[in-house]
Amino acid sequence: MAGGSGRAGQAMAGEAAVDAANDAAEAYRVVHPRRFLQKFMEEEVRPDGRGLDGFRRCTVAMGEIGTADGSAIVRLGETAVIAGIKAEIANPPIDSPDTGWLVPNVTLPRMCSPNVKQGPPGLESQTLSHYIATVLDTAVDKTQLCIAAGKLSWVLHLTVVVLNEDGNLTDACTLAAVAALRDLRLPRLSAVGVDDETMPTVEAERAIALTLSGPPVAVSFAQCSGQMLADPTSFEETLASQTITLVQQGLDGSMAGVLQPSPSAGPTVGSAVVNTAAVGVDPETLKSLYAQASRRAVEMAAILDKAADAHML
Image (cartoon, rainbow, N blue to C red; front, side):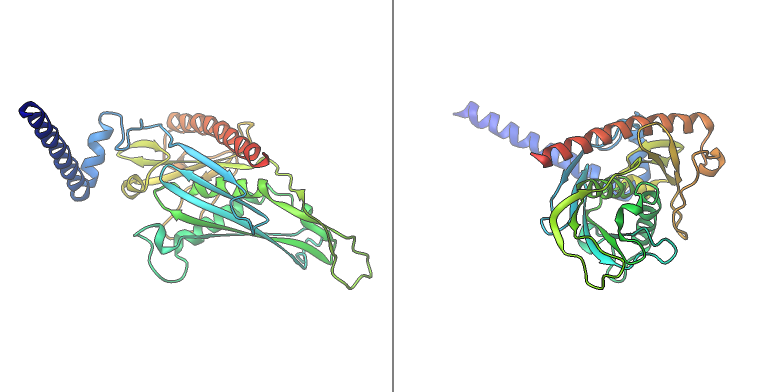
């Protein structure tokens, strides 16, 4: 009995020592966040155990919102976002009467992060919404949304809600938006004649899928102490001198552009040819980032295909 009590006491003492060490590490992280991260980076590792070029585990599930015409939830590490699409009939754009509308909106509710303040949509929501609209513009042929040229078209309200924010919302929101579009099924409607004044009727629910042309894949990096960290956490983003997102269009290795969020301006997605001065990194580093982004894009495509297959079962 005495031996058993002694071992139990040693175990409790060991657990107390571990708890004390964890508390001390957390206190150091809060008081000296930059030094905390630097000590890890000097060993070429990060606080969550990843290497500098390591990506977090990513999962995708489609069809998560029963009332939506297309939906998906994405988990990227501790970051979680959900996207839903609601299709409505509207008048087509005046300047392109044979197309429809795609209207993305990214929402960050207060519950997703202590950094989100109460009030109207903040700059991050607006920036992400503008970015999603930009990168999806060439991925969706909007003539697929035409019901009757010059008369009726589909408007797709794409809403992305951040459930938990732990960094790299750009990649997570992009993936969720693409996954929801892949899950989207529009109703088949009755034909609309030139002189018809009545609305078409639904002949079949969830009958028509969209064809996506080179769906975008976003791969983000944060520059901390002169080194690039793949798939940054929220903690790493707060210490970064800049973040860079490489947007790959499809899996043929072509880059649609580079996104560099600015605290005072919305995002810009450039052409496939990007001047290294525009992203503030040397050519060799940029080449390495491109290679990492291409490999990650292949991984993301496989994850999307797996989610689509699982949803069809």
